[in-house]
Length: 146
Image (cartoon, rainbow, N blue to C red; front, top):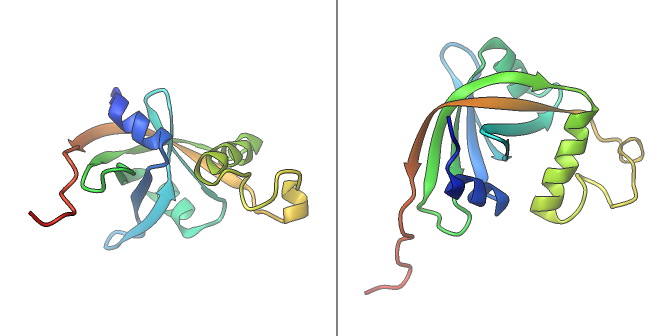
């Protein structure tokens, strides 16, 4: 599925997403996450060994709501599957790229500090194939009374 240009622009503008994974057959777990894309796949980057990493290995269905950073009443609901988990050094490099976009510096450390020196746990990336995308892009509600 083709990702809309407005969604890519929102992600490039530091959109956040609410991500839901299956904790078990009766519960859903939610997280607020940074988001990225590569071609027409969405990318989530997370620390290895977190509960959500076990969740996605047990059930690769995922749901995201990505919020337009400059118009809080505009968003995209996305349903899909994690079709690939990438857990090599490229995931660490990717979180630095994303962190630079969101915060202006590498992930959890200063510019010239290594991963080992900062004692940062390794990362993994989830490549998400979008199966359903619902656009809820609309003009932002007025903040001034009429």
